[in-house]
Image (cartoon, rainbow, N blue to C red; front, side):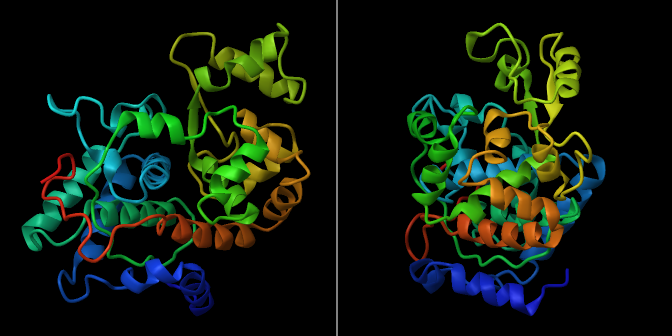
Length: 319
């Protein structure tokens, strides 16, 4: 991967001073020199079989970092003593890719036992999958440690619903130190995402109880989605043009009233975000550059470092 010096400098400057004191680029250079290569190779193998892994890992990273910080709390499996970890929360029902994280962890434990955290694995694997999907190539600092807390209630209280308002969305990201450019860029990950009909079906058939489709949705998209959702279990690509390619066409579709999720369409028309959507729609490189900045910011949210937390031996269970 080629990394522009300018991008690396920007990323360093935008990480909070507290996180930067512990997170650093090349954290495993001495303790596990092949760590990032091992992650990259296994992600590449999976991507070759299933390019949708980019969307899966991006969603996993987002859902992990915004609940208790980036601490791999999302990976914990339910047990008899802790039956309701984050993984069992409703908003996390569509998160997948856990078996790939397991595979990477097993490979790393074989080479460097008790060294690489599960939270760093999520961060690195997501970065590599974004690049393979056509997104930006960028460095991420590492040195995160895994948390001791994972509760369903936290995830259900914190994670935003599909029908969140633009103001609510900006407040959600703002509480974690992210601005409007970061927030809209991170929503741009929907360029490789999918959604079940349950998350947007009302816009197609019964918007806000009117018995009619959402008038802001393009009629041709309404017709297409009606067919998609005619049978139970339907889902649709959030980017109707290039669903497996990480590019800015998602934003162009929003400007054509072809956003599938309520929040996606609203960012194209709300005065607080519409100009940013237009900028990203017009400039693919701008979108990718801002996305990498936002991802590194997100990856530093409330991280555990130093002697805090632990390095799990098994990503699905506390030590």
